Image (tube, rainbow over all chains, first blue to last red; front, side, top):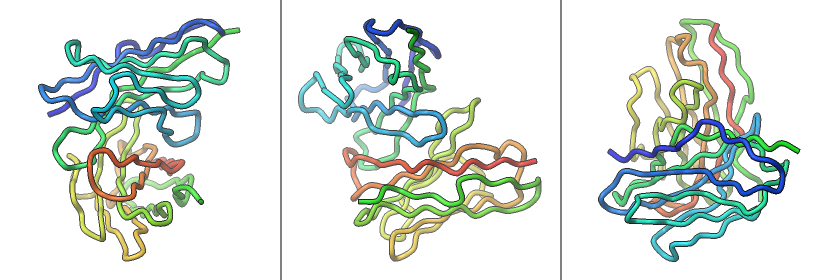
Length: 114
Length: 114
């Protein structure tokens, strides 16, 4: 079964600093990969997705992620953190199986300090 | 275009009772998935419906059931509630089947079982 590992349940950065949230997946066949963000008391919002086109994927709010097959990774980055980026971030996969069921990582809470 | 709506937003029940949660997908979307979110287990897939048919089911006991109506609206039911069923239940809709269809999430229903 597919699994997703997010390294670090909490990541703290200062406003203006680089944001790096790590995600590794387990699969011999590259799946479809997604990053979602969840603000308090809200549902999930899609930031970006990898669907086997370009390996560098640009998303909303200045976020981007790079698919690295050799490292089975799909880390999320943003050059300069903003206070409004404070939220929980989830990496998710959908295997190449025909189903559209998302398997999520445990999530990483991003804390941004002034 | 209106987003995914879920009703009610908050619900308090006692052990042994049953509960029904409702999800209205984005207009034109035919696929609806349900996920349970808890602090301990994270986000877990419950089931997916497409055109009134259950396409996939997660690893949950038979107390959890769902259905989809001809207008794509979906309900999930939990019978004989247990304390561990306290969670945020998220509904997601997408246009069709398939790995790459973006899933749009609703704000969730917060269920508390006392």
